[in-house]
Image 1 (cartoon, rainbow, N blue to C red):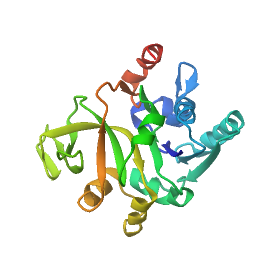
Image 2: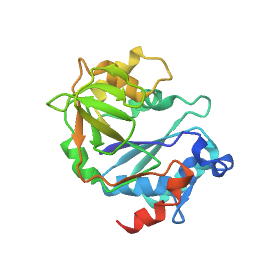
Image 3: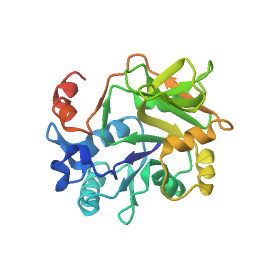
Length: 235
């Protein structure tokens, strides 16, 4: 398994903590978020992990050098976005040359009960997006074969692509093939990954993987950060 951790965000929802440290180094139970996510990915079988950095980049780079000592059998690489934050799609585009097999992509502020080894092994087609029936305002739309066809915001009625009855919430965990990454050559340096998926899904095989028992916590904001220790105790 090769993997990428999105850790470049400014963490504005975690202010004032992120005024002095990057979001990826915010502690959860005395362990930084980046280490908790990396441990889960290493347990899933990853041998190469790319981490993008931007906000307080030197701090995160120094910590990643320590994690390299902790995980000597895993190659930890940095995709440096310190000059410009590239968003999720642009971040993958910049790092894509570091991958030669399907890539597990994971947000650094997500804690879950997902078996990453199992999810990675069952990924199909050009990309596989882990989804659930979690209540939210923004949903991905799928056809009867679980191929991505659109996106909708049920609060505003906005629709991109095609609206269907199969509406699922995205988890921030997905697998992408190198061949699909090649299509990013025509995209700008900065763009969100979901816009890329929605634009390419008409001609690429982009599927949803429904996990009915998903237990997930987004630790990217202060109220859920307080619940994180309790969440970890359930695992």
